[in-house]
Image (tube, rainbow, N blue to C red; front, side, top):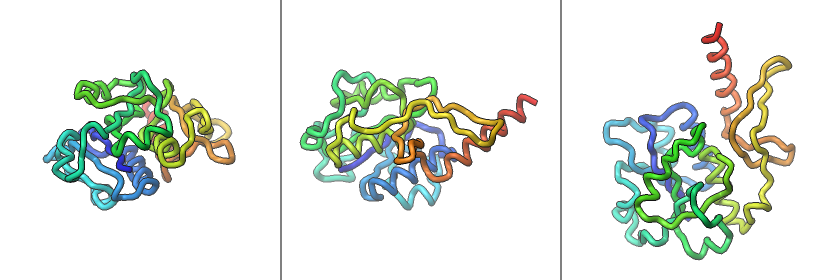
Length: 202
């Protein structure tokens, strides 16, 4: 299976880098495509080395894959009427994610891809981060799990110490300890961002 992220960011923030690296580790570098990267944007080596990056937009992937068929593309769209099911593994070869799905509040940037006519499927109505959306899709398509069989934790509270914590406004898959599965280094990054926000207030 191929996982395609239509990169709609201006560059590569620390958050985006961690998510893309995590996705690559789980789906394999040959299974991850980043499209629509502006030619003027310098792709960090740590990202370029773990996936296929191209300035092409997603409708031109056929130039990279001779067997590319637009009808085999599934757009993960929160507004889609049908949910993703294990049987979709037989229908689609590519699973397309629009931008950074973890925007809060959601900006519906997936709408720009919806206009291109791709077949849509949703992962539920609760907002997810990009790596979580890919992780959920992989479990459904490659592991045959139904959406309601996947263990989730919604809006988890991340506690940094006994006085400081923050609530994440997203849905995550939870691990055996009931903790949200997040990219390596993400907890530390969120903690740093939280400290910066506190400093701004003071």
